[in-house]
Structure formats: C-alpha cells, structure tokens
Amino acid sequence: MRRRAKTHARLNGTTVYCHCNVKTGSRASGQSAAAKYDYISREGKYAQAAGRKEVVHLESGCMPAFASSDARLYWSAADSHERSNGRLFRSLTAALPNTLDASARLELSRRFAAQVTGGELPYTLALHAGRSKQAGVDDNPHLHLVFSERVNDGVERGAEQWFRRAAPKKKGDPSSGGARKTERTKPRSWLEETRSAWAREMNLAFERAGVDDRATAESHATQLARARAAGDTAAEAHLLLNPPSTHIGPPAKHSWEDRPGRAQALKLDRYLAAEAAAASAEAVRTAHAPDVAAAAEARSQVEELDARIAELEASAAAGDRRARLDAREESVRAAGAGNGDVTAHGGGPARPHQGDDLGQPGQGRRAVARGSADPAVPGRRPVTRTATSDQDGDQWRWTHTFGRNDLLAVAKVADLAHSKVCELEASERDREGAPAEDEETP
Image 1 (spheres, rainbow, N blue to C red):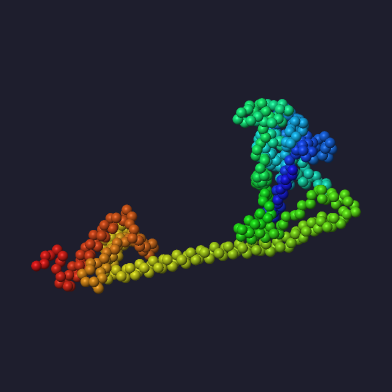
Image 2 (image 1 turned 135 degrees about the horizontal axis):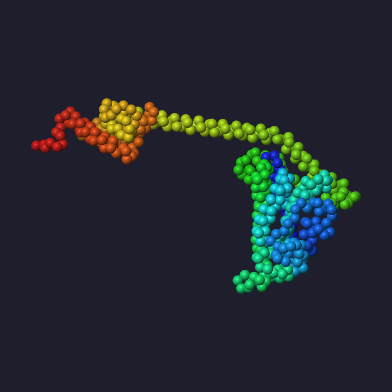
C-alpha cells in the first residue's frame, strides 16, 4: 500500500516542498524487508560504485539484541519469521531542503526519525545525495526511513520468538511471546500527523540555520480557502499566481520513452503540455509581480490612513464630550447662582468659589452643596444636592461620588448647607410675616 502526500507553498519568494511518501511492505504483496534494506544502503545487488557514493549517511537504532551488530539480520529475520499476513516494514521517504547543509540535514533527519519511531521501534535511516540524471549533480537530497511496527520492550528474545504473536497484556508474561506491535501507526490520522511533524521539523531546522524558507503540510486548496476566509488578498493573489504543478511520475515518463512509435505524440500531448503550463504560470507570475507589490503598498497606505482617521475621530469625540461637560457645568453654576451655593475644600489646596472664603486660592478638590427652591410652591423647603469636583487645568469635573478623603469636606459643606437653608427659610418668613417653626402660635 502506498500513501503519498506532497504539498508546497511559496513564502517570501522561495518555494519550499513538504514531501512525504509512506509505503507498507508485506509478504502478501511480494515485498522483502532485506531487499528494502539493501536498496537504501546500496548493498547486495544495488552495490554499484555510483550507488555507494550516493549514500551520504546510514544508521540503525532500537534494534533487539540479536541484530544489534548488524541491522540486516533484523530485516532478514522479518522475511523469514513474520506472519504471512503481517506487515514486514513501513517505509517513509522525504525530500530534504537544499538550503540546509549536510550536518543540518542529518540533524533534521534524526529528529524526525525519533518522532516517527517514538524511541521504541527498530529502524534504519539512510540519507541519499540524489544525483540528477539530466544535470549529473547531487541536487535532490532525500531520506529513507524503514521501520518495524514491533516494539522493542527491552525483553531479550531470539529472532524466531521476536516475530511470534505477543503474549496477552494482562494474563501472560511478555517474555513468553513475541514483541507486540504498536497501535499508533494504524489509523489514517497518523499519516496527517506525520506530515505535520515533518513540516514542523523542517521549519525548526530553517530557524536554527537562519534560513528564511518555510514549509507547510497544508494543500494549496486549503491555503487558498484559509486566505479567502481571512480576507488576506495578498496571500490569495500569491497563491493564485503560484498554482501547484502537475506531477508526472517516473512510470508515465518511462512509458513514453520506451515506445518509439508513440513517444513523441504522448510527450506533446501530456509531458510537454505540462512543461508549457509551468512556463506559462511562471510568465504570469513574473508579469504580475509589480502589480502584487503595488497592491501591497497601497494596502499599507490605506491601513495607515484608517489608523489616522480613527485617531482623529477619537480626538473629536473626546472634545465633544468635554464641551458637553463644560456646558452642563456652566448651566449648573448659572442655576445655582441665584439660590446660593456653599463650598468646602478637601484633598488639596482650596479655591474660592462664589464668595467662599474657606481656604486659599489654588487647585484641588472641593465639595459643593447647591440649594434651590420652587417659587411656585409656597412654603416648600429648598432642595440641597451635594457633589464633589476636581480641577483639570482650567476645567472642573463634577461627580456625585465621594471617597474617604472627601468625607470631612462633605461634612463641612453639609453643615454650611444647613446654615444656608436656615438662613433662606428665615428670609422667607420675614418677607411673608410667618412665625418660625419653633415658635408656638396662640
């Protein structure tokens, strides 16, 4: 069974491939674990001179005791002792970025192998230079990871016993059966998690090396849908100008080249058409690059203007609120001027207010009691309201809430207000000739 996942993204002008090819080898499909090991290590029938040079690095890990000195013994034992309907191995191939040097690619490969195997599955890791047939240069570095699904639990077993059915977890002794198989590689979600882990490890390797490239495991369609949903027009234009290329695998290409009578027609029909489409896409991308840059600059200017407009609107709204407060304060002052106000200062130096002499001029906090009477209702007592005000520059801000430091000033202004109310009531009685409340009438 073969599962392939290949996606790419173009970020900051650089195309980064996230390639992950996973295969499963079984005896029923005619696969051989030993042959797979020979292929990635370029041994046996694959041991040509050029092939050996292609292997940049080869290592194995988590091997049981019987194969600790030679990893090929493990894969040969899998061919001989694994059940007929069992999986012999899983094989994973991933492309390595050319922007990393050899040591960075090796570190990336080892970290990825540790994530895939979880430190408990026997594996063999090989790094190939990837020589290009057309150019004759090593420009296609990639890794091969072949791993077994049987967990190395530390119990020493022989080759034959290792591949037997595992003993029951609750009832049997692990040493009485074979090595158990892992469950985490069975669901399909494991493939998606592996792709994401590979992209994540690539990006960490780029950061460690100071490379601006970035990789993603998302498909081109997923990236385009996400950009449209977020309203990111720059990313959308970028993705539309960089469509995914058409993949033409080696079998199709070889079938065209191996048929002399139809090779040219097939190439013109598909292979050359794909090359022409790629060239056309590159031409469109080059032609529209200035437009994309101009659109990004215009969008930046619009964002700056929007921010400036928002700042001006906020400033105007604050000015309107201040003007309304000033007008309200002025109307309150005008309304209380005829009825009489009393003021006491607290929390700072005092400021004279309408003839008050309870302190020295200056800025501070004051408590004010305003009294008013309704002349249309004879005998109605004046209504008294108490508030505090703070000076902010040349302006006074009013509030009807009091803090701890205001209580003394409020008590003082309440006493003054009581005296003022009594004075107003006495004046009213004198005008009307009415007796005082504490006097008895015959």
